[in-house]
Image (tube, rainbow, N blue to C red; front, side):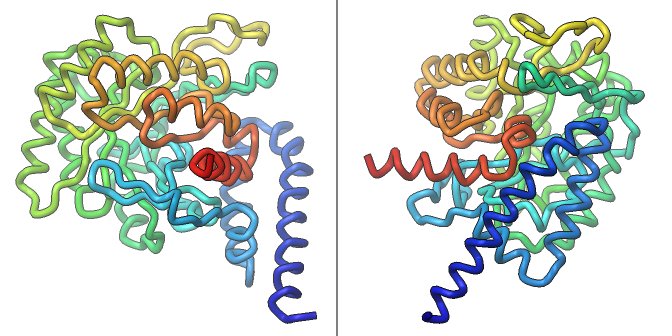
Length: 363
């Protein structure tokens, strides 16, 4: 048997084993507290990818490379349009490993100037009947300096975004300073920025929903950006619960400040139509996953049509399948991000989506 064929068969065998292993491990992960399961996944991923030959096996199992998947958006070249949303890897712990799961880009954070523990536990909940999550993490992260140390050891060549926010204990008059501190410090290390003003879990953020203040904030970031030799794209992450008037203001805001685009959408506060019982025992928090699919898609469609595609959109919210991803792209998203769907569907989701995009291109 030719050597190359033998290698291919061996790779295929181990790829099947990796897939089967996830199917076997998923019930274990889902039997644990969601936050503990999250940290366990990180440890297992790190351990596995440090074993000899495992990077190649993971790439064989999860990565689809094809020139036709490459896309240039806001001046950056993406290997493929499927990214990992912010919140999964707040501190860049898997920065150099995630490309082996097939992602075309990764968004780190939300990072704040100072480290903070976030809201009290328990603060992350699975809604298995709805294939959803509710979280009220509260921007728990190790802070700006810790993330920069990870970025200094960056080995991946996929696009990396920095999602920036404010510390919970920051007074309203110092909100802008928190964002500009993160922006200035991260500027040499990330490829683009997402300004997170739409998380429902950080307390007192009415000011962050005020259009006049957002103009002030984005203009401050743009001024810093213009002072640099190389400017980095700036995007605004918006909530899915905005009404038509508020969405019109978002379009006006992007065009007025000349930022580079929008990440649509963040988690939702709505609980409409959920199958899960005893939601009152869970309490407040941002909802993500399948229940957001239609709502997030309609926000993307409205922004794209209202602006006449004047700016790029990263579509996120309820992507659990190839069809969900294609729906977001058809609605007007230039790129997409997954998170909750990745948790429920497993690491094959990214490759499946990229295959579907390729098949659509062929057709």
